[in-house]
Length: 268
Image (cartoon, rainbow, N blue to C red):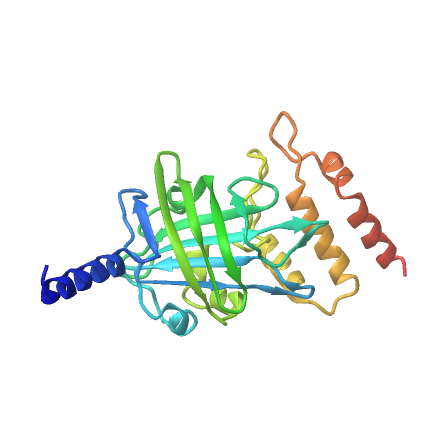
């Protein structure tokens, strides 16, 4: 092989590897595929420090710069994964490990989102929600990047797999949720909108969600830290009766330490 042929062959190999890249999504959801052009991860902050991580893959470019300022995401596609590990009612800083859909901890909430020409969802939220599977984070430096792979069942019949290498985006997930990107997140990462594990529980009303969100934002309230820890523990430890409604007594039994701390604070 001549030098020119070797150079040409090397350039071809580089172009193929670049085309494949570290960010890819194989498979479809509701008949829709995703060709990844950018990937970012965001780290929410709580009054106790870093709390979980969002990994977002999209067919849009310059995602980090546009998350808050973009007026509408039209004809766009996203795979959003929210990774959390909870100990003692507290969501911990993210770390390299496996996260499972449906697990108490560590767990991942994920959604495949497609928008139409108006910026609205083109497929129903329930058809894009991950119902089983896992995300493996094999490398994570919270100030720089996160990489790993995923195997997810989307809805009842679809499945996607892939890999990611996402750069840290220093945008507050709270600011992103208040922007045009917010409605695309749905309930992911919002403890006030998490779907109950107990299928017969009533859905929260808009007033319930608003009251919860306002309470979460009021970080100066008395016993804020203790009450949030109790609320998060209740969600993480939720027990369902045979009728598929929340068993409040059994759930609270799993949160005795958090309940005691909240009561002690309230009595001071």
